[in-house]
Image 1 (cartoon, rainbow, N blue to C red):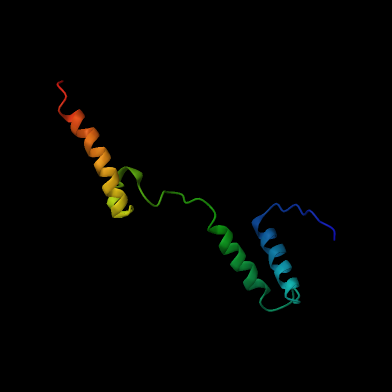
Image 2: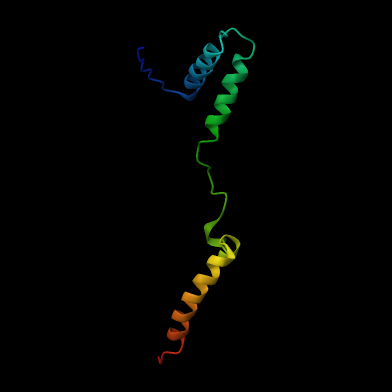
Length: 94
């Protein structure tokens, strides 16, 4: 078995190579009618990996409630530990 390194400069070139490799693995040729659809599906997949121009979620307006993501049994443990610490700090003279 030998390895072959291929330098690919553009996504379209990569998509054509990947589609050709997938078709070759299935025993099909590039002349098959589904080749162009395979190239387009690979390009669509690659386009999902590009970063968005604007963030989908604005972090400044993000309101996260810990209770929505943590199991209640862990919340009870944390609240009991945190509650003791804050009650001692709350009544300190300023």
